[in-house]
Image (cartoon, rainbow, N blue to C red; front, side, top):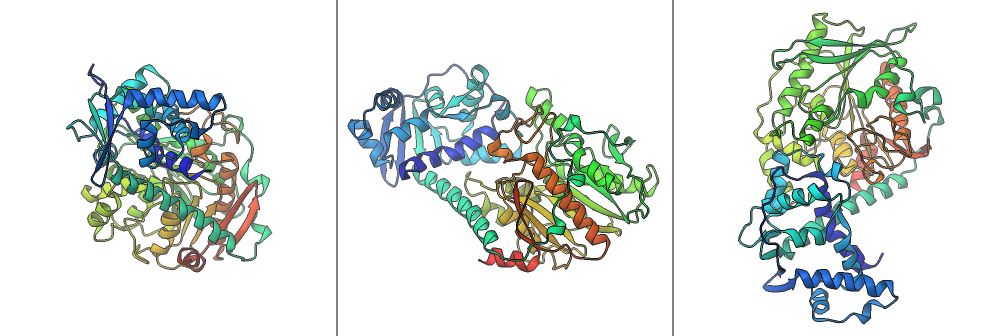
Length: 550
């Protein structure tokens, strides 16, 4: 890819991601549209007419379609664009007309909360309309456009913004591009470093067809037996519904039972594939429901029937849900065998497990958040959630004395516990992640989080190449080549490749980890192992330090 094309793409990546994840309820009024964009860098201001930019872009496309070269297009506007670093006018034209938002339903799958307000504040550092630096009009205009059209391009947005002049700060934008570039370099370096390791593999720990139910969609799988238990809890007005999966008969019952917690916007249905696999191998599994931050709440938010949450209330409610389930089991309000408990969760569910273990954030979170959120080019979106804990009083509970282990799928916590061994856990952890995950990047979140725990001979991190933050979520009619019918209508760019294979690999390796843990044997480290169309790596503390230290 040409340098100029890459620059053009970088200029829209951050705004494209931003507009795919966040927008506002408010409608923009019938105000006049902007007439020009003024680009500011250092002490220079370059004015460009939006109409001329639009006409020029169409002209470039027409000439390129007719076979004329890029160098044939000379104009005063082209000179300005060259000064701004757009060497290829054709690449810029493509960028301007490419959709910032490709899927209306996805654009509305957002959390209008502290996260959205934070990004709104940071957008105003780059884009200002006339004398308004709030950033609100940008979001309102996008929301208004989405009322009438499925796709919105950069030109659509520019031509609709209600202002005479759009001020664009190129100095701030350079910082955005630099942050994204550094993150992508880090991801590429992680892959290189992982593949450079040359530990011996052990074929005995590859997935078996009987373990993974690979290649079947959710509605094709035979349902295992589970019951829904309604728990009346003091912190909620309605009963908490939990799914209790009783294990298949075994000669020797498992020593532990499992509590599973979905992530933000996830629910029990998304992870029944894992509960089923675990119960088939003899583990009792209790899958929590988190009203207010599950897929039902996300649906209500999208259709406008539920007001936007502040975001901060999610943490104490989820912790209280978990404690209520543990207490209900003690009181025999439901019955599952097992002497100890394994806390397991996806994303925010995994973080809930770490917080429930009694670990408060390391001192200095406020300052770390100020540095991490210094601009809106936030490549690790989990930082937005972590920084909400600055102002959240977490409930205090007694220690979970029977805690056996924590299993975190796409877990995070790099801002909460940034230094080695600051997570005071006396139990092993098994963390999983993927190289396509920009929500909770494997390098900083899973590998970094492992090093934040005290060294334990049983602790491991699993990294799956090509897996993303959303790969573990199974939805209705999903296959390895279909995105399914759920609210999570995500394309391959966000889900990654072979989601069912990723889910099968996760199930098999989590089962093997728990098997080894029960037998008192550490899970062997595996490098450059290929199975089910996927390459994966299992690291311990020493190999993780080697990767991060490279």
